[in-house]
Length: 215
Image (tube, rainbow, N blue to C red; front, side):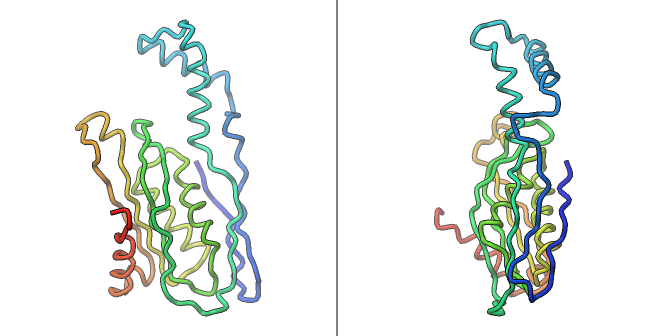
């Protein structure tokens, strides 16, 4: 699923710039609902589940609705502003909740994202950092790629001096099946620019990302 977007205008004279996102279909309008529901019904039947049971008659439809919703992010415009105050310290939004679907088992992985950047000529609306996390979470994913995509989007469209992204998540494909180790957390990180290359900045970002008041 492609997430290509047009770049932000970089002129320091622009008071505000927007990164437009392509519109997706409404989450409850998959491209071929009849085929999707038929496939869901066939899967359940193949698993010896009686879909003629009154309690299960609507389950294929609900499955289609649920997966379509989980795989569809809301379109938004990422508002950026000139960095008039020449702010040159880290901006970090911590513990952004997210959920995504493991592309190997179609089971959720659920966690939080810590997203930070060192501003260059422009800054971004803080809520849009959460929107970017959501953009890449609503897909069939692996945590490693999702981490890199979030960092890469900020690097490409904001042109900051540095970017840092850390994801912490529990994968149900690991905790409900297989080794069955509930509570196990997977951490991934992606660092760019000074957040990667400058030791003090890297240490500051990682320390701030770890300092979760929830313990």
